[in-house]
Amino acid sequence: MGQTLQMDPVLENILEQARWAPSGDNTQPWRFEVVDPRHVVVHGFDTRSHCVYDLDGHPSQLSLGALLESMALAASSHGLRMEARRRLSLPDTLPTFDVHLLDSPGMLPDSLAAFLPQRSVQRRRLSTRRLRTSEKAALAASLPPGYGVQWFEGGRARLACARLMFDNAKLRLTMPEAHKVHRDVIEWGARYSSDRIPEQALGVDPMTARLMRWVMHSWRRVDFFNTWLAGTVAPRLQMDLLPGLYCAAHFVLLAEAPPRHIDDYVAAGRAMQRFWLTATQLGLQLQPELTPLIFARYVRERRSFSRTDGMQELAQELAAQCQAVLGEAAFDRAVFLGRIGAGPAASARSLRRPLQDLLVAPSPGQ
Image (tube, rainbow, N blue to C red; front, side):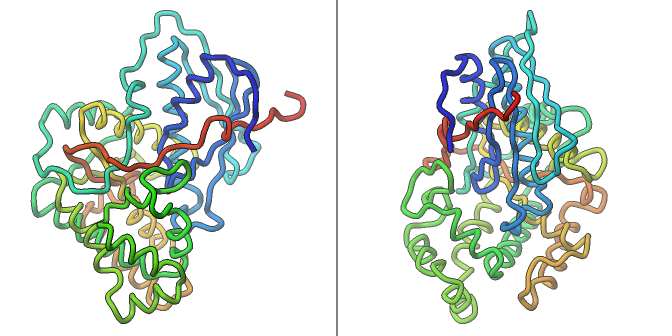
């Protein structure tokens, strides 16, 4: 339940801007507790208990990192420096950060702050024009120390990545553990959604969208279509293979060392957000392609994610394919995968919950 209060206008602006940070399936895994005009507690959560993609909460932790970076950028517009410290006494399932906003005389606004509300996901086709040297240099320079980017350009490399995403989608769309996730995160018939993904942002034509809506009503329908009517082919072509071919490049963000801990993923999320906002600043569009890395980690750690026969074997094949595309040296250090290119901004997109709905009452004793 949201908290109704009169908020310091500077803090309100910072939180209004920061809430546009990206999150998987638009879950927005954060709530804000305002202690005073310069101290906010960010209460994070994850969806690992019911979402097969949120392995150990790490994708949600990436999102929390993006939120913290967004707060820092928005604060810079007011001459404030942000410091965030995680409460180490709390479990990783409830990552909680004390965020302090400190006066910083002479601090200049970060130019990326202006693009926080504009940044969005573009799931449709992009231009195949190669990225300019200046664009790639700006994107690489946006990353903090300890991170780098590897590009997959040209027709052959894009085809390899497109095939990876096409095969990855077969796994996603044929296991019951993912069905409820997909069914619940789509707002059918919508162009915009404050807490889900609107249908018109999926990247499929209206006929395919109508069929998907009917089929996804129950797992029984999904299983029948997948078994007898090649039910995954049309959405995989439209959402994965063709967009994977029609873009300037695919890319992977790499950490110096393989991420192991919540703080590694939060830091990676901050790097990801700077990269994505820089792409927006350059007039480029971006789409995350994170799930192959997630399934590869299930395989690497020999963890089961489905009770359905054949799913683990498909994941093993996908992990081998992912490693072949990325290269052995990059495979373990990959923190984010995506595609990028020039093109119009998405005409349909996820919005965000109103700020009042993201506020919680101060804890006793605050």
